Length: 364
Image (cartoon, rainbow, N blue to C red):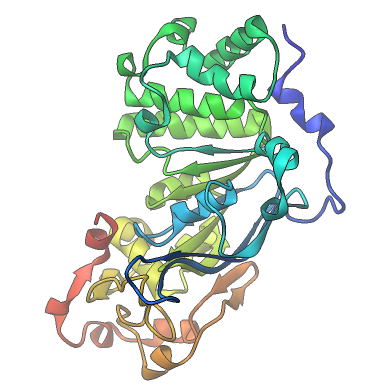
C-alpha cells in the first residue's frame, strides 16, 4: 500500500490564520467578457459582483437558469479563466494572487468535476491513463504506485479493476462520471467544485452519482460548491443554497429555510415551477413576464424587475443590495416583506399571455 492516502490529507493541512473563518470566501467577484465589434466598455456581464462564503465541510448550492453565470464562477475559481475583479480565498490563501509553483501546488487542493464526462476524458486514452495524468503532472509516485492509486480509487467510486484498461467509448455516462469524480479526488483536494455533475445522466444514474458524492464527501471530508439548475439536487445535497439571476446572487439561505420561506420573487418562481406540490406555494409564483434580459445590457435597478409579477416603479430605479431577511437569510429585494401581502388577483393581473412558466425558462 502506498503512503499517499487521500483519507489522511487533512492531518497535514495548514488550517490558516483563523480556524473559525469560512473555508472559502468569494468577495465582489466580477467576470465580464468583451464583445468583438462592440465599442470599448461594452461587455457581457456574466458575473457581476458575486459574494459568498462556504464553511469547512459544508456543501453550498448555486442554482439558477442557464446563462446566469454559475459555470463562469466555477471556471474563475479554478483559475481556468481570469477574473475581471474581486477576491477569492481558499483556506485563507488568495487564489487569484497565486502564480507559478504556488498556484501549481494550490491546484492539488481544489478540483473541478465537469458537467459532461464524455468531453472531460480523452477518447484516445484508457481510463487508467487518463486518471494517472494528474498524478504524473504533480510528480506523485512512480508508475507502479500510480497504477495502484488509480485501482484503489476506481474501487472507491464503485468500479472494478477492469475499467483501468477500458476506453471511454466502452463505458456508460454514469461510469464515466464516476471516473471523472475519482480522477479529481486522486489529488487529495480539500475543495471540490461540481458543475452540473448529473445533468447529462438519466434519472436512475443521477441518484447513484449523488449518493456517491455524499459518501465521498463524508469519507474525504470535502468542502463542496455544487452547481445545478435542478432544485431537487440542491435539496438533497446542500446545506445552504445561493440563488443566481443574471450574474448576481439574489438570495442565500439554509436549505430548509429557502424551500419553506423563499423571500425573493425569482426564488419563488424557481420553486413553484418544479416543486409546487411539495411547497404549497401559490401557483402564480411560478409565472414570469417576458423574456430573460441579455447580460450584455442588463436592466437598471433590480435585474429581475422586467420579469417580476410583483415589480413596482422603484424596482427599476434603485440598485438593490442583499438585505437580511432572517438569521443567515439574505435577499436582494427591497419589498421582500410585502410579497405575502400581494393578493393572488394582483399577482395575476395584466396580460397573462405575456407571462411564461419558469419551467420553460429553466429548460431553455
